Amino acid sequence: MKTNARTEAEITMFDNYIIVYKFIQDLHFFVTGGDDENELILSAVLQGFFDSVALLLRMILETDANVIAGKVAVNSMDPAAPLSEQTISQALATAREHLTRTLFQ
Image (cartoon, rainbow, N blue to C red):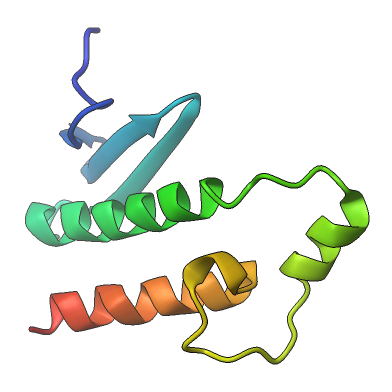
């Protein structure tokens, strides 16, 4: 089936589940919910996660395993540091906070 999921999210039903999906490169992102869930909320969750991963993937410029492990390790850094200087867990926490603020506005 031809899909536009590379440019915008697609929504479909499968066995009483709503599935919202989007593709970036060779990664496929799916958010599922029950048939009583709001498709717009599921789409907002997917877009927030998608944007976060896109930001994190731009950080991958290092090939030295020790440097990568050091960046991924949880350590205490300034939470106001730029996204490129944050660890993966800190960047995901920042994205989660941003998504939460967006949903509750």
